[in-house]
Length: 305
Length: 308
Image 1 (cartoon, rainbow over the protein chains, first blue to last red):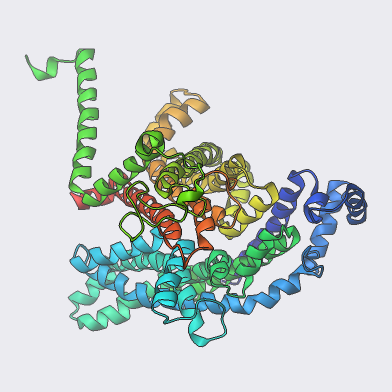
Image 2 (cartoon, rainbow over the protein chains, first blue to last red):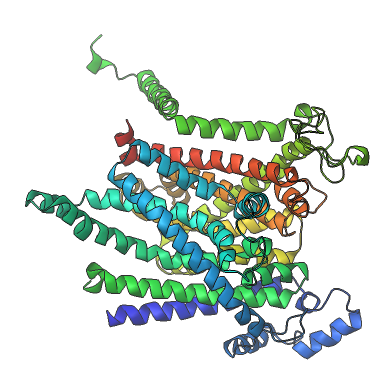
């Protein structure tokens, strides 16, 4: 168990170094990182001075070592737009995105769990078909469009929810719902197939044949095992939402990392885009690690394996 | 004639043909019985048709500006007319025509993207799975790295670095989608590699590439086509999303994402500028997902049996 933990943590560290390397490599591949990191109207002389100051004329290996040292010290460069360190700007936006993603995940679970459980328990039934269609819709409607349409219907025509920002409690409903939709689709499919799979297991048949109450079997045997397979994806889905909120936060003017990313793209603020990419990757890698560790703790087959 | 005696080569050929025909007929029958598969296929074909024959479907140039007829609502709303079925945008360009022409960008980007991704990914996966050992580790390390990243963020990041053009979008999708093909291929190769017919091909002295391309690759076609269908659907999404934040094809090219980006600023006053391009994306993506679901069932023998 301990060995698995250590190996898994080491693997995550390697992944993070890989991310830093990948970002570094992609920037160098464009040929001239100096012109990327300067504002568009910098003179050639300014670019040349910047290139020398940043050390882009040094050997590439030296540059990589100095870059990775900087990143590990939390220095992701200065935002071109704000002219201040990029990382604090990103961190400042983190709570709003976490709030949005948490609400979205909650909605996704609340919708997908009943649909998936019913569908998996009665495959082929009418309810199952309806549930599968809802899941399919969740995955076929682009979030950037759904967001706009919901504004049109619920905020402008019906006036139920505020259109922009997050200054009211009800502000989170629309953007959270939109962010949760694809996750809802994914979780519904997963729950359904997990129920189908567990239903066919030997231990369920054994439980039935020794005369256990069906509702006891459902809760103690089936639900518990379905939950374990859901835990293994919920962390991953949460990471996906943290990194996938760019359109929704832009549309709803939600003051999180996604909105910042959208703005940074519009400002050609390359360092800020880079900082967000690296930071969210770190968070996602950490979440995946935590999920795997939790999964190992929850599932005795892995715990004792 | 006694059946046991008929071992002429012609007979062999005939029976082979018959099974192939049976196979196709069988899959066709499955398609017919599965209504969602039929719907998915029809939707897909209709979008391909729109992209190929756009100039024959609509008489308007999607780029033709006409200020006299700008911001016309769709035909069934007050003020609209059937000259412009879905209305016109803020520059007076015909919405229907723009949506039809936009299918070209979406399909082109996603198909060429999926093609590049599958060629790259299948090549890497075949080698990683078949050669194994150190080669496997070298190939799969970056593959697993990319697969564990927040995909949308990286696509946005690369698009920012490279700048906005059709070629860049295709390259981004082709390269960033290849790892998922590599992982699928490698897994399948690891399974197939142990089978008796590969073993016998090896002992018969077949060459490396011959084994990979003739004995292993054909067995991968089913899962690969299924994956490619879902990836095409995903790329249509991502292309439109990048267009929405101004990172896909240049603004002059009609694409669903660019149209949404334009329409967004008129959301409350001219909502049809937003509704229709979005519906086009939903329609296409729904079709591809239905088709993908059906293909997955067809190519998975376990599921196929239960569907019969």
